[in-house]
Amino acid sequence: MRRTAVALTLLTALSCGSFAGSQAVSAASSPAGGGAGGPGTNILVVGIDSRAGLSAAEKRRLHVGGKGCNCTDVMMLVHLSQNRRRASIVSIPRDSYVEYAGTTAPARSGKINGAYAIGGGPLTVATVEKATGLHIDHYLETGFTGFEQTVNNLGGATVCTDTPLKDENSGLDIGAGRHLADGNGALRYVRARHVNLRPGDLGRVRRQQHVVNDLLARLSAEGSLNGPISTARTVRTLLKSVRTDARTGLDDLVRIGWALGHLRADRTEFATVPIRLFDHRVPGVGSTLVWDEARSAALWSALGADRPITGDARIQPVAEHPAPTDPARIAVRVDDADVAAALRGNGFVVTDTSPTAPPLRPQGPPVIRYATGQEENAATVAAALPGSRVQADPDLDGGVEIAVGSRPVRVDTVTYDRNVADGAPVTADRLRCTTATATATDPAQAATTPAQTAATRPGGGTGPAGQR
Image 1 (cartoon, rainbow, N blue to C red):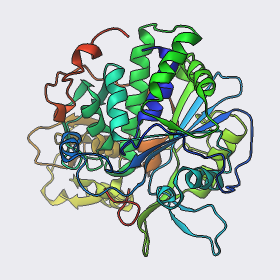
Image 2: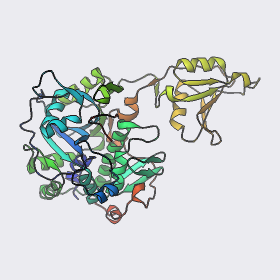
Image 3: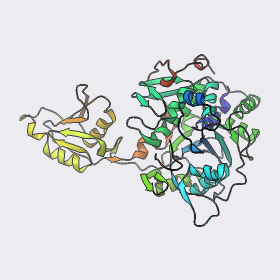
Image 4: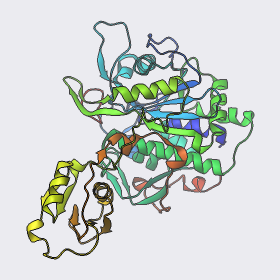
């Protein structure tokens, strides 16, 4: 498989819906969405949540039981710069609350994934153009089986996690480490929404970005970059499992794939649209995500002007004391009344244990002890207590405990921004898996089953249009 089209292949494959065929999807005739042309090329990549055409056996194998919504489940906007030296890949969460494109009055609003159910690819394109102000040049669409087939054809995909991940809904069950997964195992990894400290769509989107990025890195290291003829051959194979709009031909895909294949990791950016409200309830629609107006506008403005999105403080403000997790969800036991009060004012859930504190404080700074699985929470507490020492304690039943020492304690106000934790703009070289490779033997555990041999060779919400 040639690297020139690898990036394009994986982006088009990151979907969670069923594939309905390889015919063209006409987006050229989409309703006016208000998108303005600009330098560079914008490609909208979607995956459809539909079980149509899947047998009962296929649903069991792919662990995609339940009712589909015939809506987009995954949506990525890929901006390729005019000079072909940078790509910005922005994930748009499926539950984003937007105003649909079209001529009906009054304007209708709903989850962005619902545009497909109303008007297919054309209305999806027009709605994204209306919401972002960007013109979409090309449209690509695929689904469950398209994802599985593509990953298998590419020899598997790397999935990684610092802690074990389990999600009964998607069938995911893997231990900590890096795993080389086949298409089935990778599908479970990118679909998981109910896992550990990263529930919901933003955590899932980041895992999708990890899969794309690490597969690109692996195949890039193989040096499998050939000429345009080989690229065209690969694109023809791609078109067996991916649908395009009428404006997107073989020559377009070859040019896009060739450009993406030549990009350095530090010139490829990943991000998720910044969110202001994570559970905005709308009657008849359900739980939705509301974009942060200023930050998302800055994001689309940067792409429209063909500028990088990493390092832009308008998109991702830099907090003085950033916290990796939400203090309001962290239970802390503190043996000093003043420190307990200060942490409580900072949003932590605090239990004051000062009545049982030792009469003579130990020498040194505060010691933060944390239970297994509380590493990120302990890091948040440490951000609020500069200079403290952090220690793992497997004997703790849960939560975090603080033993204040003899030194004066300063409590800083920390800022938790879920957009930072799960979707801040980041370059590909900083998004890669860093954990050691683990071994798995079961597809439900991100396994490499029939595809293992090929893989080791070189080469947010509920409600309508939001069902899971």
